[in-house]
Length: 390
Image (tube, rainbow, N blue to C red):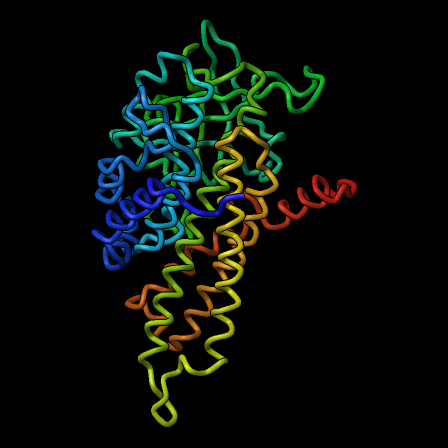
């Protein structure tokens, strides 16, 4: 078992860090305040070839893997962007890129993959619904046969990046539950234009991740053509899982990078801040131990995430590793960033020290894209062999 990175992987991580350093903390603080999409940053990421690292070479990608993508997200997040960088990779090279590369038609691949890899277009995915939540098999959005295509009706909620996207991966029922043998049947994926007649959306005011909007999305008789089907008609559930589990990997990488950044801010402050006799506060175990504990947790999450990514790249099962990594990363990063805020005292509450943004953004991932409780349910059943509890 080899835990060492290759020279190529180290160079990829270093390239990502250099791209991230061109922007820095103030760039992200200003975008957060303006609730603006980081277009300049994403353009630089794509120009450096980082967006397409795990996508096929014939369409402009590098043909590498998820381990390289995880390293890129870690470095970019630690350079200033924080955990929301993981969402940028989630919506574009994963929701857009992976879904098309694995399940799209040849024409779809030729037309869209080069544009996603270059950053010409952005993507989003519409899965979650108000009355379904984590129980995706209960979604009600329905695509009914209409001519050579379908007509789409329904509602989605908490859809990331709609306002900046050109294409939306929509998951809908194409057969009613009563007409199929199992609930996992009758789901399909479609890739539609965001700006299409009958598709509307409205922004949700929220606590953090302000550089990427979250929206409610409405479909009212939206026409979907036959060539916009992604994957297998009525057989999209297991294909969707292939996309969703990779989102765990970039989510974890973003959290690991955000925690790394928070630790650096806290340590720099603790070495300089002097009180009660002129000793730097970093000498006190009351400051050291909480940061050290969180550091240990985050490093374990990083390693498990690299294992999940490596398994994915080898075509082996990786669901447990991806979920465990995400669970520990969300807890370790959230606690670690809060300990970093505590280290700075009152200044940790000030926007100028950036920790409050990192904390607000990371808090989302305790329950998204999958909650801690659902991960624990998964582990209890799949790994411990316990009965279903919900």
